[in-house]
Structures are given as C-alpha cells and as structure tokens.
Length: 150
Figure 1: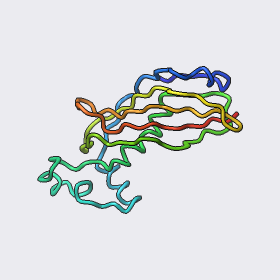
Figure 2 (figure 1 turned 90 degrees about the vertical axis):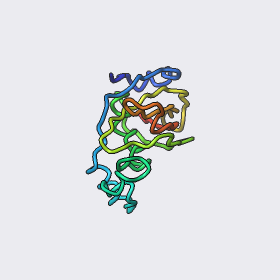
Figure 3 (figure 1 turned 90 degrees about the horizontal axis):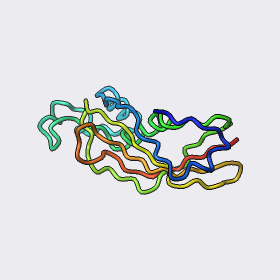
C-alpha cells in the first residue's frame, strides 16, 4: 500500500514503517538484459543449463539487479506530492545475504529511519530489505538515501 503525503509532511516521516510492496517475479529475461547492460555474463546468471548443476541449482539474479529493484519498489511505497525533484542520493551498508534464483518472487519492506533538512529540501534515510518469498534470509539489506526538493 502506498503512503501518500505532501512535501510539507516529510519532516514528520521519521520512524514510519512504510510496510512492504507487492511481489515481483525475477525473470531470466531481466537477468540477461542486466548482464548485457553491465557486461557481467557470468554463467551463474546467464547459462540456465550450467547453472542448474551449479551451487544454487538454478541461474541467479545479479545482486546489483536485485538492489536496483529498490527503485520501482520505492515508488510503490511512498508518493510525495508537491515536489519538483526526487533524487536517489545513495546507499549505505548494502549486503546480499541470499541469492535470488530466476523465477523467485521478491518484495521490499522499508522503514524511514531519519529525515534531515538538506539544501533546498529533505533527505530521507530508509532501511530497506528485499525479501524472497518463502526464503529464510533476505536478498538485500540496505540503507537508502533519498532527497526531495520543493
């Protein structure tokens, strides 16, 4: 469920649990396109036959592909009205505790840890966890930094 607020309400968002997104299925086509975009064609990602006999029993998504899903997930969790610019400012403490096999479904859970005033706007510090459906460990644990300008 999307939390919708106005720019003026950003300062009060610290400590807010934004909940989780819906699930998305990670496909081999996504993995292949990511491999092409990053020039990372390691067989554990792009060779389904070889990967089936590999350590994960199937091809897996690149960790950075899974991390990049934070972008569409983030927009699913929070909508801020009255802003001119939204910027993905950065990430802190990124970890990839578990691989995402092709065909798995993932979603993101997020909590706003801090809201700080920055030149011309606000910066949100957000704890983000990408969960694998049925998994015991998350795929990604990261702290995202997002800026909003009026």
